[in-house]
Structure formats: C-alpha cells, structure tokens
Image 1 (cartoon, rainbow, N blue to C red):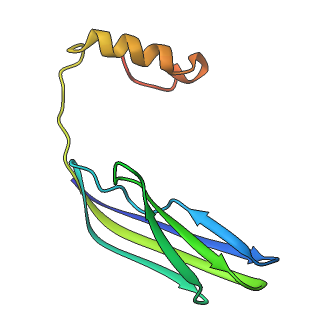
Image 2 (image 1 turned 60 degrees about the vertical axis):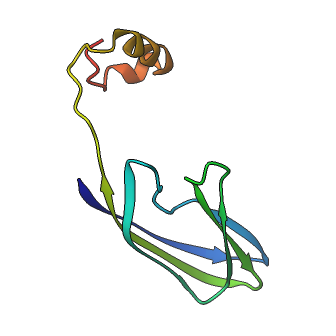
Length: 112
C-alpha cells in the first residue's frame, strides 16, 4: 500500500546550539521509501545519522545564530502487510493486552 507522509515545522531559534530530529520515514524490509524531500530554510549544516539496525535516521542540525527555522519533509512510502485471521495468535494477543494500558484498551479493536 502506498501512502504519503509529511511534516512542516517552524522553530524560533533563540541561541546557537544543536537540534536533533527523527522525522524521516523508516526504511525496513516491509517498507520502502519511494521518494522523499527534506528542506531547511535558511540553510544550516546538517548531518544524517543512522541507528545500529539502520532503520532510524536521525538528523543533527548545527544552529549558529538566532532566527526562524522552517523544516519541511515529504515522502511517498510503499508498505507491505499481511492480514491475519482474528484469534490466530492468542499468545501474542495476551502479551499485547499486558503492554497496552487498561485505559487505552477501550479505544482498541483487538477483540480481547
């Protein structure tokens, strides 16, 4: 299934420093990033960092002066999934139920 994701952020920079963001779409065996754009206005030095497993992509921005910063990200992602029969994995549902806070379970449709 293909879908589009986007983020638009504006920051008021009050002093020099470092800004670390994790806004890029994941690249996994079941998710492919087909197209993406990442823009920063005005230009600042950017370094892209990767997690050990390679899925997370972190951006580090070196901010040198005060001002406004506009960040825009857009991506088209292709995602594969598999539909499972309800109740096929009762052990997994029991684990999920323990991990989901009780107050939130009322909003889920896990059938548990």
